[in-house]
Image (cartoon, helix red, strand yellow):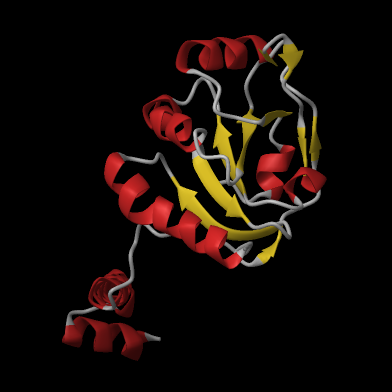
Length: 197
């Protein structure tokens, strides 16, 4: 035991002293590799791409009407037979407000449906939000959070493109902007629409 201490005193460096340096070095190498690999750090993978949409059945947002008729809720069977854009939104979500004009633009195209999943919100606030900004959705389901988990939602907003067989084909994480709407989302939507013909 005394010889170990004598050895430490001679070298002047404790093995425990090197541990943080080794961990830091390993992290630096890993970060360098990720930066040089061309991997987009903003892109989060989704295990649901090219997989069936999850089973779910959401009630309508109470009081949400179009032309005096209750806007229906949203369930998995509604995804069958046509391409559907599924948007996860909430009234408390500032980025949802920012992207809403692109959803309104999408709603002018009758080649697909738009379904909203109102995430962890209240009926009153969801109604107020859509009354103020417009309702682009053909159907809106009220979600307390469970369906969002099934869809693999990281946060709001998120927008999915689902094909006519209810397969999730694309997931856009975060708010749509002018550039991402034009250069990323619309080309992905056109690709799915073309393949679904």
